[in-house]
Length: 229
Image 1 (cartoon, rainbow, N blue to C red):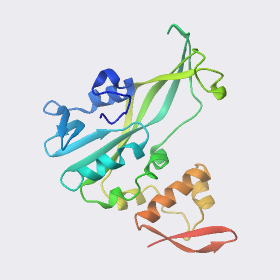
Image 2: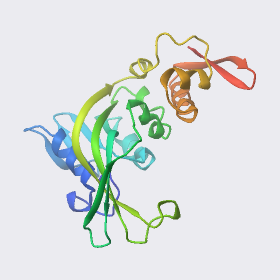
Image 3: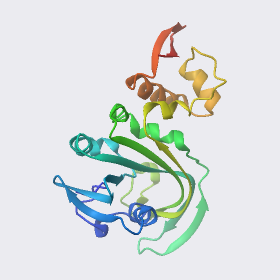
């Protein structure tokens, strides 16, 4: 299967963001959609296998675990630094376009990394987070959730790439923690320093504990204190 599981193989079954990133990422001598060890790989660059995954790292766990013992694998994940919300009629005619107030950053990768937190311990695995400008296309087809009042999210489109961050080992992720953060620290301390939600800070510390970067250094009230190993 492709790294986006939409029921088939190739760009016809991929959403636009995945296809756009693959086109942006590929270099002249790269091979695309290559069958290796029974899996279709998005991009093969010499001895490097590149998989682009826009969401749901858990769906790739088995595939990655089968590939990394014998191949160098890079997982590429986009996060939306700026997103535009495009609304369409049931027939697909655009009726509005506005900038979303929500912003993501490289830290957002921990929303997905909690599914495969130990893979960066393997010398053949690396993670690249790409900050993008994208569009989320919503259609008034009555099939969406009640929270979206029946509007469905039907596509995501790449507009531009703003930046990229390559993490080849757990120690690279430590650079995301501000050096002025007082240690030991709680998840609330980390969230305040990073300017993110406590929920995201919890996922970050969970991943770093699984990677043996952080350990538990006691408690502050009901909150765990984290320290570097």
